[in-house]
Length: 159
Image 1 (tube, one colour):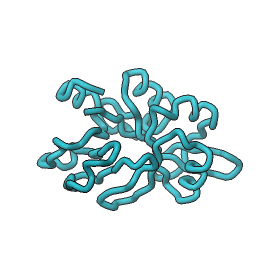
Image 2 (cartoon, one colour; image 1 turned 45 degrees about the horizontal axis):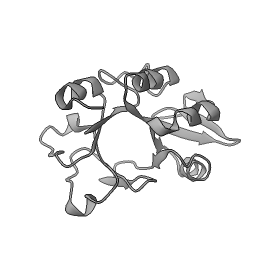
Image 3 (cartoon, one colour; image 1 turned 90 degrees about the vertical axis):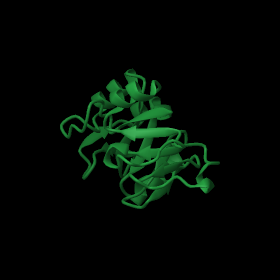
Image 4 (tube, helix red, strand yellow; image 1 turned 90 degrees about the horizontal axis):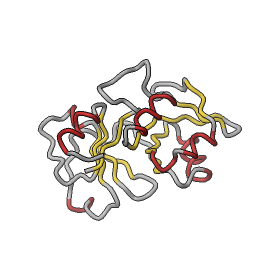
């Protein structure tokens, strides 16, 4: 099972550092893929941030790490830009829907959403934040996205 660092967090939520370039690079350096919350502002301007855009990230820097990222677009305009210009990156958009389809055909699951037979042919099944649904059967997930990737690496022994 592969492990994705939610917003770059390594040992739990940290609003001060999550979704920042330094934290994302720390998580990548630790061997994890990273889910990032991304906003698009005109003229190819990309911004990181969960509830609102907070930190500018250069498109070139972003593209350098694209293969390590799962981009959660916060607005539809970002998703349209991303699919057009950042096509090497796995991208999706959702709020609280039970599941979202990722640009590469993977399935991103909201905490507690059951994994069903029709999902098993997807390139990846990502169980997001299993720590919020402790009884969730994620045995058929291929990836976990968590605020505690170091803890889950101990449990599953993979990244």
